[in-house]
Image (cartoon, rainbow, N blue to C red; front, side, top):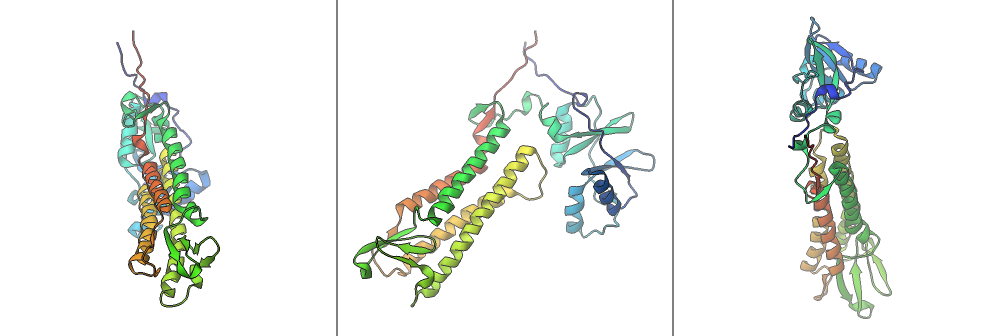
Length: 321
């Protein structure tokens, strides 16, 4: 007969390297104590040494600014309240309490006294089968690591196909004949247009549309910066998710939106040059290679942030005789 094995808090390594602070103490006192002891959290106790809540360095940094509180405010104004666990609490319950509040530690009590803290990272490795990730298509032993590695790979591919390829001239955006150059075809890249025997920077183009070409060059710089910001945001999200670190920004959404915006706006600018007859030729057309690379880049970006649907955990069932 099969049966899930349930783990309890007593099966974890209960971290006793923690410290407490009085509920009457100020936020500044809490920050100093964290710095002196090199710890990110303090358990808040009342005058009778009974548990009140937990204050984290993350809460001090973010909430003081958001709520306009001073450093003399009491820790009770910034602490979060989470129901403590005992050694007999299941790991599933402890994990759920932290997950629902989006916090990283929960106090462990015994006879109403705090004896340590349990972390959400420790709980993860002891979760029963019902917490396995079963959404993905490919079964792997460690879906978290697989998801993290897949995100990094897809992000690098996005960076290559969407940013580096047009930057170094592997693909362009438009193609058009240049009558003044003996019928040669020019390919329009990020900062310049090139043909078989010529090369012209957009900043060197003068005349009626000179400012438009200058604006295109300026946005090309912005385009590269946005691409790098997108990669940075996705890396931040992927690493925090892999390490189960609490973050205060939705880096996943930021990375996706910024990356998509960068590519879409760049293409809109080039296509608008055709529609406005800036190229002054009737046979200008989109560079199929550049469009294909951009499509691949978008697919890689969306795959990077949708990786949870790629991998799932291999089901493990403990058999009990």
